[in-house]
Image (cartoon, rainbow, N blue to C red; front, side):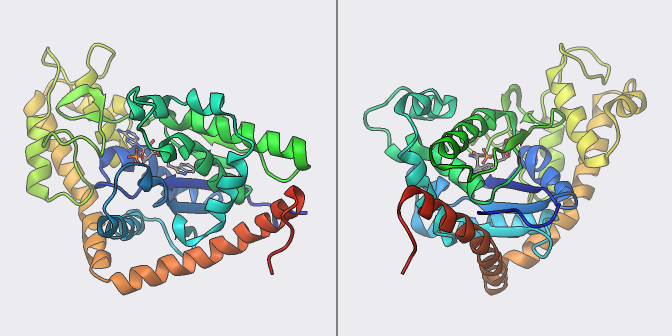
Length: 336
Ligand code: AMP
Ligand code: TRP
């Protein structure tokens, strides 16, 4: 029987190491992970196997995985406190994913919104990995018997699926998995593109002024903030009829740690130019140490590999102890 040691609750989350991480990733995910590592026993995974669901370049995949590891550490994930690791280095993820694939139903996977969006209706030539992607994600979390999964709103349905699969397994084979809860924060959950507040800031967006990367040069940050679209009117206030300013205020509030209402009080009547200058300054100041740490780390590939290898060894201990239990329950028995 697999019993969680100690009283600390466990969290698991993952990030795809594709493209450059941006402010949306930071405010919606990474920044929260940094805070959560003080409250929970934390597992943070660079999900390189998930990055293979769309066509990939092998060299780029391994390069971007290390870069993302460096960025998470630069943002404050402490590899001594949290278990930070590469998914592909812990073979149990793929093994459990297969077993869960054998209890998942076609219909429930077909209902996944992300699959529908990414396959764009092309259900014949689309890769099968894109279809089974949420099963691998379920395996990621269930392997660690995690209680809580911090994710963005877009991942709620995938967490629902892992709860269903974990529950179905427990019912068929005996209680093995913890059924995890999603942890979705409403504040900063959706940072919008700077040039179009109706679209999410996204790694796959190539419009030059849509997003700000976490390693962006200060001049470029200032330029993008200056060119960010605003709403009609002159006052700096948030509101449903002011999607662009609401987005800028949310970003400002996240990096300054100041409530939106206070920022409104300070900048309301000063005009857009003054507000944008203050926001650019705040962003540059907040991102400067992150960029510096990132650049130091990313140049030292050997040290990064060492840190991630150590994380994978810690992850593997937990993952294997779950798999010993799972294998015996499903009739696969022990490994030689
Ligand atoms: P992705 O960029 O899709 O790999 O997402 C990595 C993490 O960042 C997930 O937890 C997302 O929910 C979060 N995320 C991505 N884009 C945004 C955004 N524009 N605003 C807030 N969170 C985001
Ligand atoms: N699918 C998630 C995303 O696109 C990434 C992910 C993979 C994940 N495995 C996970 C998130 C496990 C939380 C838990 O953002």
